[in-house]
Length: 216
Length: 249
Image (cartoon, rainbow over all chains, first blue to last red):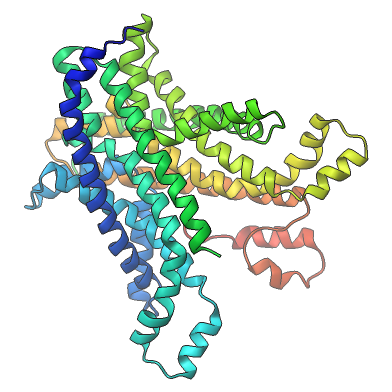
């Protein structure tokens, strides 16, 4: 193994840029995934078949097809339809949309996990439907799903290198660019790999601790 | 739908075949890794638990694409020999998804009631016999549904190999896109192809699950069987249910 610390030092500035882009994509992607996932989960519970059925079909389709292809689809097909997004926006939308179908399942399980007595109590108190959701069901459901949502944020972090393929200069994109300019591929890639572990491992420990506190 | 020539369809279908091969080989390697690492993580020696735990955290912690690019671009430069792209991909996918699988194996083995192991000890089974004849047969049905999810993740993960230039579905789609200059049809077609593959995979795993559950005297997962339990016998129940198990993938 020819390991060169100077190469590593040369790569560091681009690495920080890449890390920033990765975290940016992760943060925005998570926000989309959390919001859209809740929307899917509620729409799937709708009593109207015309709402619940297409939403279920759509989320199943997105969940069972590769994120990489979805990114290509958003990146290459939407402009043909007259909607041009930047590479990073495409990546954020792709990550958010893909993972919203996972968070939808998480929310669904959380909502199903609220005891039936809570629904009955809300009915007995003749709370309006909107109040039942916002004051009784969702607060209890969301508390339970926080750790599971966090796991998907970590999963999203590990899928973020795919954004490289559409030209986003996140960590792996920076490493690859550096490699093609200097022909030193080893050090950047190893650093990026370690960076992923250094972010993901403490985050998963944190989630485990959170799970012990929130989910009884 | 579109004006793909026969040659382009052939390209896509050859891509499907590569994707299927990749999925099968990586799943085989992944299953081996999952069982070895998963069982090692329940080993009584701390050093074995530590090494397998480190393997799990490293491969779970980093991204499959980063590993794949490292194996593909860096290993040849440093070691002087190069893996065929296909096998570099199978190696990384198998090791990564095997790490995820090891958690499934560990969890399912831990969920077998301890009394079962104790009974095995009382009857004078060797540790290997306990594992093979008592623990694994009971843990296996619990593993099948999460393995199904993991297999679908693996199938989706195979799309990454297109970055290395392996001619899977996604790579073929890029070629078709370049040839026709039209993105919408080809990407729609391959998304549907992936979905169909995932659907078929789920159907196969449902069969495996039913077999596994029947093997330990439990019936199929759907709630419907519970209601029909009052009928003549469990065997007939399983047969009757085989047509009824449907639902989304």
